Image (cartoon, rainbow, N blue to C red; front, side, top):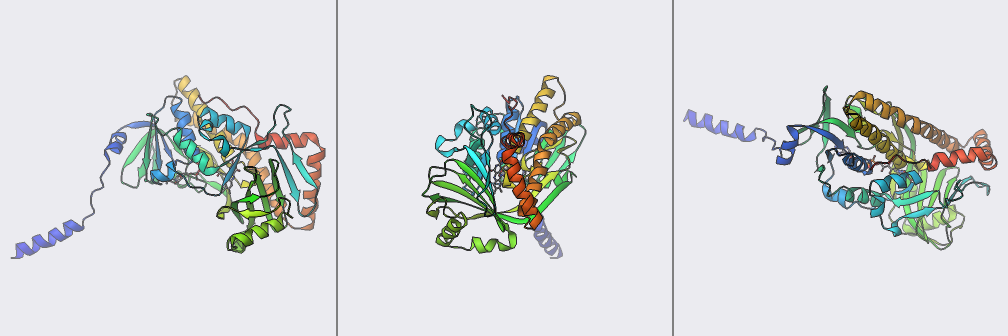
Length: 428
Ligand SMILES: Cc1cc2nc3c(=O)[nH]c(=O)nc-3n(C[C@H](O)[C@H](O)[C@H](O)COP(=O)(O)OP(=O)(O)OC[C@H]3O[C@@H](n4cnc5c(N)ncnc54)[C@H](O)[C@@H]3O)c2cc1C
């Protein structure tokens, strides 16, 4: 009787015992070896890097906490991404640009910056006589879709979707990531492309400069009745910033930046009230306005990692630098980070060196920091100046617009910086 009681108690305790975590067969085979590269994050940066590295004959594993359908069929998220000519070159080399239908690629032929209610504006036109455009605009979900389609069937890439990386640890010959299903993966090089709030950056001990602007970006699409002439407009008003980006013939992308505590005033407007509000803000320059999408909001926090690497570990995309969107540089810098890292890895392979060595990653860091830091700092100063409503700030911003228009080298410098009309290194 006693034995029966003990056995039945034991049975209950055994059933309560945590179930052993099953390691999926495909992970088991990767787990037992040191892989070439593991990338955490299958956003546009992670997927672009995956393609650049398989072009160098490396084997890559990409992990994302989202399920596959969210990556394969990304939903419209309100973000319209302004891309530079250099980004177009990089995306073409990665086989992504060709996958985006022409009707989803919109041209920016010129740009203007307005200040307050003054009709005066700073104008940017392409600096190269043979170039009729400053850049392009493509919806973020279309970029994501093309980035996934370009790698989806590649035999050198394995995807682990619906799995979150929870920790990382570094050894001499590899780094090991810990996944929330209990499995681990080791690789000669681990790369985090896990967003501006990168958990892997934090876990790897890399500090980060974070700038919370206390502002929120509200984005949407509107239909208009007057032509936009492919002009992008950045309008620094006194309580908010308004960016209007040209899309199809009668469509604009609208980006309103407003103090976070006032965002509900706009987010709670009905479509008709929002359209009327916007028409009033743009002083009827675009004719009738009709909201044609939902309103999406993004809190504005800029981030800059103190370094873009540590032992056998690198940061790319927003995980390295998360930009304020006012100068539309976030993903453009992300692509440059991929270009720079792939170039150093390629050199390492060519000279028979270790692709995860600290020396290689340090060169990557220096290269990307040199390109990005001036843009990051200038953007943050610009945001501060153009959201400062003090009298002297207003005078300085007006003077800067005039300086930009009349001092040609200054304007050329700004256009070249913003459009990054440099030649991207070949990734293929
Ligand atoms: C309103 C707005 C407008 C913008 N406009 C422009 C513009 O005009 N031009 C421009 O160049 N840029 C622009 N950007 C910036 C651009 O959107 C980003 O730079 C780009 O989307 C970042 O891509 P990413 O791949 O680095 O990160 P993300 O797209 O954030 O992807 C990160 C991925 O990592 C995954 N992940 C995170 N943590 C883990 C984990 N622990 N384990 C597994 N997976 C994980 C996530 O699920 C996600 O899929 C804009 C941004 C905003 C908000």
